[in-house]
Image (cartoon, rainbow, N blue to C red; front, side, top):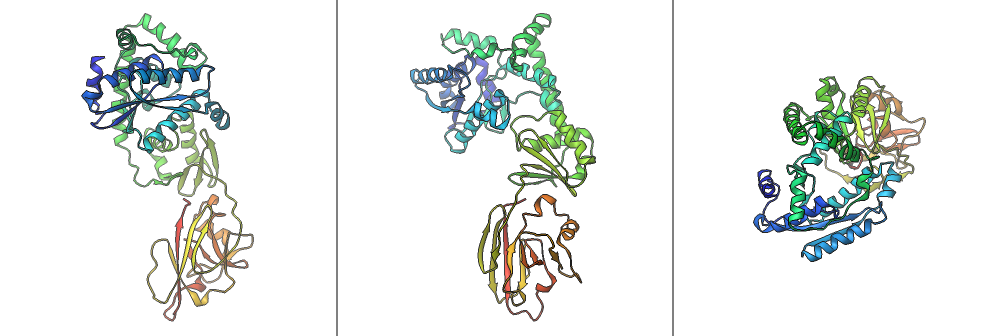
Length: 447
């Protein structure tokens, strides 16, 4: 284990003064990592704490957590324990137990990071885990991104100090310090893909080929270099991103397939912490080129993809059915699932700013109301002689279909006077004779 501290320093895993949370299940690898990091915390000038999660999947999972807490007590290590709802998450989100447990686990880690209780999370993956991961990803149809395996440091938060350490070294360390640990009986269940790789495939390969694990990891390192080079060729400049959605210009999809696939992988990483399958990447790529405008497809992890004019919109696309009317008046109006509309009366003429309309207040009918579009609505936008159906106007402006029912309009009966943050009707325009103005500002939640 002497080489581990060198690996930590080489990869700049731990900075002086940081609090390192060690993900500890009570198993051999995580106990060894927790014990080792705690023994060298003085050299690294850091604090080491344990993080353990009871997923409630196994009957004795609570006993494993108790074991970790007792180990920490005996070794004077501060510890955080959590109770997860992995079974519930798996059922509600239609995930495998492995996926659900991972989601719960990383949810705990992210919470600790956000609350400032720890600076980094140390994971106990070792060299054999890396070889298994690479092989498993290849068998699942992964490209270079999956074949590169796990990173020593991910997102500047998750560190893997043992990633270059063989299992034999960990076992020797356990024996040297007579460390006790718990065995997860599910590790022998070969119905799990990783267990099958670990318990059946890898032992067979090791008998036939020397240095199986080292050679697979070496292959992964070469893949990582190639993958990094290709990724440097990718420009993401005109991709639009908000909290829940990403809009990718359709022009991107006419690039080489290798580039398009990587663009999509980067986009999906915003929504899921694991790689989405290659078949879904292929599906989205073909959808972008062949689907009709307005078409939507659903992917795992509650991701939807919608083709919207010049863009492919990806993310948590929700159908909203907004109702209600709001009398126009000065002041702030908050509309659920849209944002805030703020109207201010003024006698000073200025040029409209971004996300602002300025109208002639004296031309605004007293009975004008904010509402959402209705059948029969017509609109005569600024500079247009005559009116057109609001639906046709939305099509002309290339406003995505999913958003048309969520944009407030200012109306009298079926006559639209203003489309929020889009355009005003010609009859409300400001002229040289305008004396009283309404300045209307928009602060939108929507994409």
